[in-house]
Length: 220
Image (tube, rainbow, N blue to C red; front, side):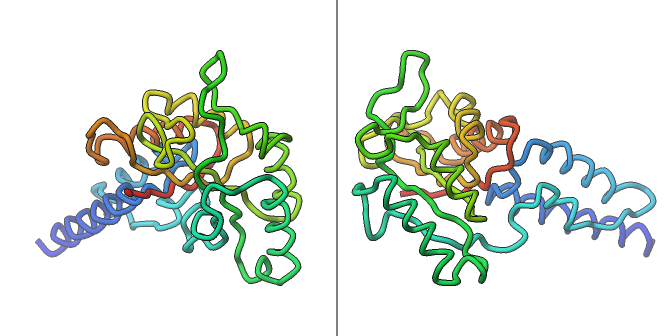
């Protein structure tokens, strides 16, 4: 009786943790879904396998709260690649990077209003002429990580660039190819769809992207 209760309790704790992790969408690496399934099986088997936090966070993301800088509150849509490079430089020179402030995150307004002929997001030529991949390379060379912004709707909240609705897999692969480490995902202009319906689509797309990308939810 006692042993069975103990196993059931461990299973309940495991599922509660799993639901919280899925809700906050911090497990978005390529192997996360398979790893979660293995964790459920090992944590609820007849031998009473132990819950392992390391297994739940197998892709290395979300062990601690991500710390860094985001462009929106101060600069809003007035962003360009020189600003991002200078911010990365300052993060290192001020000692913030050494203290764990690793993320340099672009917010809204970094892309052209229209996608290219293949449906890909296009960095705004007037403000990011070198492209996002080159910017990511620069940030990575500083020992930092680059974040980017998109939206669960047809357009982002600023209405100046496309959202990812219906293009989640394509955009996730684009972000991975560019070397993006963090995605802030907003919820404007989403055709009145519930965030519970919209966010998991991008979460799965990131899992399939081939790169571990931290998924940050924003419901404006």
